[in-house]
Image (cartoon, rainbow, N blue to C red; front, side, top):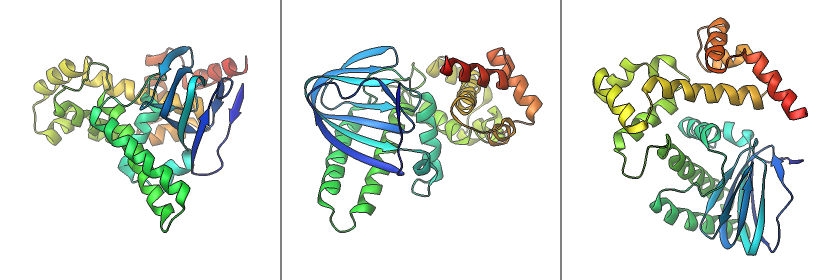
Length: 283
């Protein structure tokens, strides 16, 4: 299985393909794929779905993917890596939103733009990026970076807004605000305690519990636990961080607390989980 690398913070590629773009492959970076024109099939992991003009897909480093082209397809590709995520180009809040994308994209085929107004916004953004890359005019680098940042945040909004699954376009805006608050403060355990969430939004604990369950389909504590677990799993699978570094980053009391939390959720220690994943990749 071929694995591609990226040696710049981000890269923009525009290309027209008349056949299968590549055999199934994997990246060490993140890739946003926008279909400017054409039709075909997208394969990602074990899923397959038709694609068409106006759709955007997110490919993460753990995904295996390829495209089968039915009619000549014009692809816009935005590739970005950890260097860009951690740079000062993105403000801290947007980094946390991006973290949410990376952990919670469902890794299935299909357009990630669920909000119709954002679909209408994205194409002009991409067309502007294509022009800046082609023309190399005055201040093109600065304008390109601002457009790239905007595109990333628009994608983040779409994924954040439509998770958990029960959240839809008609969902009360308050639940979206609560989810965004949790995502932004997940690294600070005190801030995502029930009483602090209630204080921030000016609601009672009894109301918050009922309201969150009704609109998200799971309890508040279950959501926080599952979200934090997804961050832990990603680090164990796709980073070289030591266990004590993960403990400190995600605000666990100590390594014993972290081990107990992880074992309760996954039935094995973090070390065993990482070893199992690495062995499965080699096999």
